[in-house]
Length: 292
Image: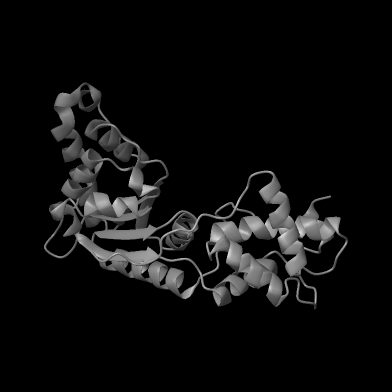
């Protein structure tokens, strides 16, 4: 029997999979999501979301996808690994992902880059005439090389007098900032930019409680006491991924000790066990919101 079933949960509360159902909207995440949706509705072009590893960018992207599915006039695709080597490779992938049929001529050799660009532009114009909004979401955008970033810049040149024909949402680690800041013609096209920071201690507590509720816990007692939450925050530095990973281990320890609630001693016991096998302390990440 799974550990979460023994504790009265209907689902695993602290999975690290980016399930939108378990995505706790802090003020920062809510502001980012709402602003992205506004930018997409207005078709402003380019949105950039930055954040260190574990701040919730990937889960935010899944929540965005969930929101877009409810909007019938938006056609979107998400790229999970944007490690493209050439412009031809990127444009070909882009067209295929949006179900644009490619001719043998357009795929024959590198001389047809202009034809691929032309196919993208015709597709975007057609969808604009059909009142459809085309959206490309790129996760792990720090992996984009300068060639692909330049292609994205060119795509943003496709526009009417009122709006951009393609909407780009880039979510990446802070390394992405250093890339795009060196490209004046690219960074000038950023319509909305935001950096996700780690949670504070109150948000850490709220995240834990939210996930417990979403997993179907109906117990009347407080499963994590305040001292336990404080220790979890001290270890995780407020990074959602570290919080969920630690809480998962703590609940398993709760069962092993045959206890009813998580206190500070249980958390410290888990951390001590992990240190013995080399897990160590969570890395202290950078904080702050870079200025564009």
